[in-house]
Image 1 (cartoon, rainbow, N blue to C red):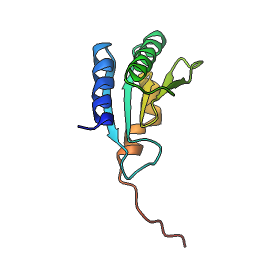
Image 2: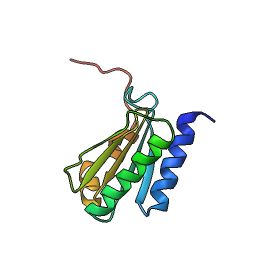
Image 3: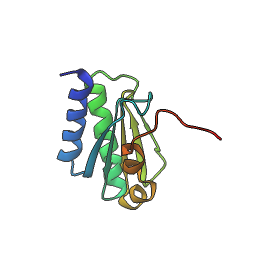
Length: 116
């Protein structure tokens, strides 16, 4: 198994262990050059969302991803933990439903666009 797949499993296990809700992993191969995977989860409160993001950040660092950082530090509803090849979004459930990242990134993206 490759390192990114192993790290994805570790992050999902960490989120699950810390009571994150509705954890979804999306394979971004062929959809984006930004990362290989995106993980989306929900927290039950702003404090829970913050704690989850810190746990994920710790796991990235423990597993050798040195340039990891948390985006949205001032937000109560959303955090993004940028693990370079693995991006983790942690949302308040209402904000998650509003942005619908799962729907946007799970759909097939056409290889070509025709402009008329």
